[in-house]
Length: 543
Image: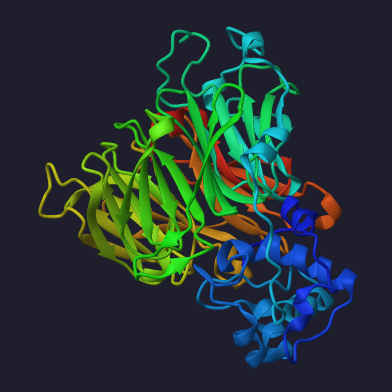
């Protein structure tokens, strides 16, 4: 289950079901009024569906179908929601009221409503262009160092903040989709208008409500949103093709991916991801967990979560789409490339494995056994004095960073083998470093205790020892999450998640000196700031 605040989603509206529907067919299920049912449905979508599934079949989180939930009953379920679990589910006592917790506990004992499909025609109806590509400026209009901008997700506000990394000013709040998970920028444009489409200029967002937006960092603040399309009712990730022609979005519901024209955001092609999983079973809710552009090949990597498959999608011919379906393990989640850009490293967190895909051969390279539920987020690569080039991940289920070798060309003896592990105080979701930094940072957001949840830990690349535990905030109901370095690696930015607070922007980003680990400043006026992406680092694959 995920942290969020109440709000109406496109999926909630599209489902259009109330307590008078089939949800009341379950024997011995609790009863809710139509208003209570609709409220619980919205709560479940925004906080729980990402891990447990719209149909509650389970994935990263457990199966929550009524046949299992009725055995536990309302009191026990309420207690679990309130306190969280050691397996990685957050406590929600600082997010929900007691009445809301009981409401959600009753709801998950009832039959889940099945949301509708979405056609290409409907996507095209929901496509909007605010500034035509022909009218894009040929140089930045604001005079700022845009390559040190931070593009920051304001999760519960349904916005993206643009922050000047040099001045620490929040220069824009852009209306986007709700609960954005990842933002991706253009990487390797090869067009006849290179001065117009400079690498890193355009950024694409994907909201949980299925809305995809295009942001132009060269526009003046207040004018950076240039196009949008809704391509699903529930979605998670986005990527831009290496040639700059296409953008791709992945749906949780309907389970599909959509390829769009990267210039004007017009939907072009829809591909369902329903299919047969690695165990030979048909899966209806086979969701797209993550999508990435392969740096060295004209392909997208599409992680089909419930199938346990990586799909390598060649975009050179959309009419005759070539897709390699690469079997691995369940349930695929987040990943990142090695420094060469050839190998993709992704967590199969329910299988306790890191999956390695060779994007050159388009085949499975290896699977590395880890501890409970690896979750690297955008990941981290660095050089270890003994193992050579390595990568690391935090875990949803345990306070641990696992580190493995990832250089088969020059260090074959250590490739795809665990090098060492670092114990942390709590389970986390993000790990980050920089080539010029001696340290690796890990958060502990999944731990239920506030003191741990509000702290990040920093360990030394050479000694593997934790050198400092930093209490980022001590405010009730807040947590420390996600780290990002600035362009030259001299600063580390850490997000402070705020609770609802009646919609007030009480979240902040705390900036630390990357060498001394001392606090420099706090950037305030943000709503649940989550992932933040430095333009220079992301377009240059700095991990």
